[in-house]
Image 1 (tube, one colour):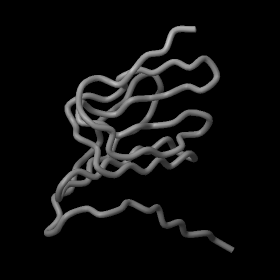
Image 2 (cartoon, rainbow, N blue to C red; image 1 turned 60 degrees about the horizontal axis):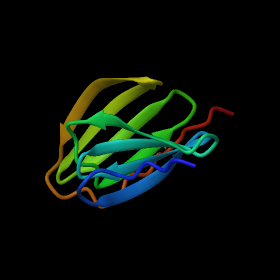
Image 3 (tube, rainbow, N blue to C red; image 1 turned 90 degrees about the horizontal axis):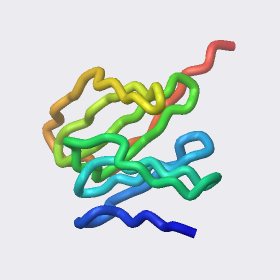
Length: 101
């Protein structure tokens, strides 16, 4: 077996993304596929302190410092959508869903 290791730096967080795992790292966001043990640096240019994956529409939310960044997952592509600067540090990212009756 061949194992790929994360690049230099620290892993900061992780979240399930369907049947895969997103790992926030100093270098960006890695995508781990447990089916074939593949690990790819999937999103560069961000330091992900917090991650949230919304499976229904493929949204990826990255929290870093006082900023939230929103991306659309079209694996293997990722599309930046917008970012929001907050007045305080992002400690966690949780999705809230509304359901029509």
